[in-house]
Image (cartoon, rainbow, N blue to C red; front, side, top):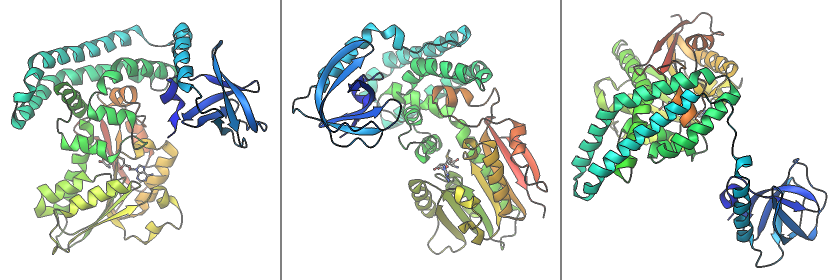
Length: 456
Ligand SMILES: C[S@@+](CC[C@H](N)C(=O)[O-])C[C@H]1O[C@@H](n2cnc3c(N)ncnc32)[C@H](O)[C@@H]1O
């Protein structure tokens, strides 16, 4: 098994010196080390048994014998020539060497305003105080509570914290938003935030998953489901509490979904029952608005031909299997299909989407947040072309308003998005000049909902 250099040595691995050339250590396994030329060029042939020395700064950490078999690529594997090569000793010496130079390797922050540091302390104080309260008054009785007691306690802790937590977050926006377009300032403030606050918050399940992004990208369907399910997950009362704070912070995800749910319900109400409504969700994720329609408004859940598009197979499997739990096997008026593909496929001139019937409604919530202005305009214009006359396109996109979700997403979770202004939402419609565009806020106030309607 390969361990990354970070996992094996910590954040500052030593440099390997082979034939007087420095290589970064990329990884380590039981049989050798992965080395990478510092200038990314493939090394000249180094075939055969050689000595690799390791250095941290000016300190020599020791050396081992390795055999290099093949050095054609910039990253190459060097096998240990001896069975007992002691990499653990080198890692220990690396840690000792780092301690002596901690002042030079620690990040230097140049642009963090003092009032942001004060605010981070206020946040941390809020969390420490809640932790103390929970650990003193609630956790000692953890084994005595019924499941209902636990649910009640967590609901009450949520109720009694929500206002203050929201206020604190909004203050975070006031500090962070002025740095939105200042790359150095943002980097420094994020580093401080991650060390001081994210470090604490990731004790909660949703913060942990959102920050570490185990599926390799933010906003995976499981994170969405945490927000929709609104359950106090966690092993301890304090970790449940942190998760609950994350649910408060993630309310925008739920409200964005509710906006679309309401739109779909109204569309069905205002359209004759005999007319099949063609609806497409792009970046559909778990499709909870559709599951909600089927579950909570069965009287409206008929006469739909629904297409869910997502690049994530697991999200589509979740969505379709959960939708069909609420559709009777004899109901032929509800058709739900998944298209496992990227929206990029839609942009190809000969894309498979050209065979789709024109749609009454297309929506995309939480996908264009990742796309730059030019790609957003292209996608919006393509989706607009897929609409029937009179059809609507809805785009949900996070905003950069002071009452939005900028601090928690960008600063605390390193969840970088295009936080758009209202003008930037209208800019998405540039290539659809005959469409009627309207931008409103969802109920959380953190998401712009753009509706673009094609003339009938
Ligand atoms: C933030 S989630 C939003 C999911 C859903 N719309 C919601 O609001 O619950 C974004 C979704 O877009 C999907 N996605 C990301 N990149 C995509 C791409 N290139 N093409 C299609 N789907 C994509 C992800 O798999 C994820 O399910």
